[in-house]
Length: 266
Image (cartoon, rainbow, N blue to C red; front, side, top):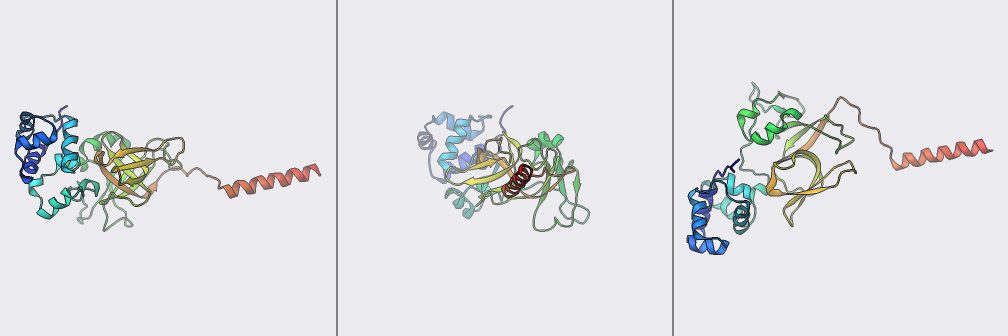
């Protein structure tokens, strides 16, 4: 399946002219031929190689997602300068993206539900208002105003004691630079929809995703691979959470067993 290039060709040409480079000059800086660069700019390259995408992203200090999905020619000079300074909007929650949503009869945002069976469709069409409108919706008076909420169904045991099949109500994050580890639903094309403890690593512009279940190892994903982040607000489940004992409770239990053994011996 070919990569949807969106604004790739136009953005590449726009950025080159903005820096006042000729095609020969930019091609030399990127280490590619002028013919290849011209093919990118003219849109003749329908599926740009990943190496070329990353090469241009690094050179212009922007994420691949920005180069593909945002029409840079439509941005203000202030926003362009902010991007060129390395403050990529896709590392700050993609504030310029239009979040597909639904509203009720009072023109208030619904809470859309993404069950396990809808996950595959969500990964492909999370930005499509038509697809979002097919999801089940509901409203809760305690989750209104100021935030956009969505509910995702969990799958697996990586976040125990939150059980498999539980529903996570979460709010859309517009700032991804999390200052501390935060429970979040993370949407990526490769990993899918994951509910993890998430922290941001500014040095390599990546996120660390950690399961509450110690049997699962933590792993990292690059910020440019992330499509959405939703912050945990509440959980709904038909199951009671598994009871866990604190170290103090375990210590008291052992002391009580020892006391009874001593009593039996005497």
